[in-house]
Amino acid sequence: MSRTLTASDRSRLTRLASTLPVGSPERKAILKGLGAMQGRRASVTLAERKKHDKQTAKMMGGIIDLAVREWEGAISTLHLDDLSKAYNQIDNFENIANRMKSRLGDIWASHVDGHGMADFYDEVTDAGHYDLIQAYESAQHELQEMVDDGMADEGNERYVQRRIEEDVLPVLEDAIEQFARDYDPSDVRVDYRR
Image (cartoon, rainbow, N blue to C red):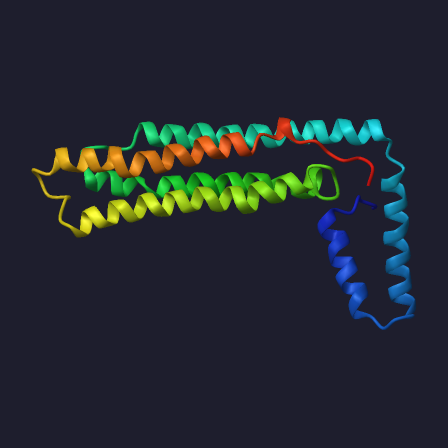
């Protein structure tokens, strides 16, 4: 039974070939097979490549939009005057960023690897994800400082609310606004001359 090799399969075969002695029949066979596959991939028309990349951008956009909506939803439900509840909710922001990265990873081999959206994918899953995690960590740090200062006790609700509104929410809101602006796949222009 034959099957199509994934990018992961090709990568494993390339690594395997690199471990074999130069000139060995096994190494030659692997490299020849990979070369033939590359030739078949090159025979895809420009129109087909553009169509594929447009579909990939749409898929990636859906994943990114979902993450933005989830992040904004988490902001809107963050408890402002109850430090204990806010502290328990804060990890949701990291989970949202990690789920987005995982969902994008799910389409890597089938839609991104070796195609026009690969650079954008790298930007989103590296710099974009990193920026969201940095915002989460900053917000978490602010909440931890309040907990350490004993602000979770009753009677501090007004102070807690003011601190969360001034020091926590802006970090989370600014991060997701910047992320949404910087990582819009419909703005990606692919260079097909390569």
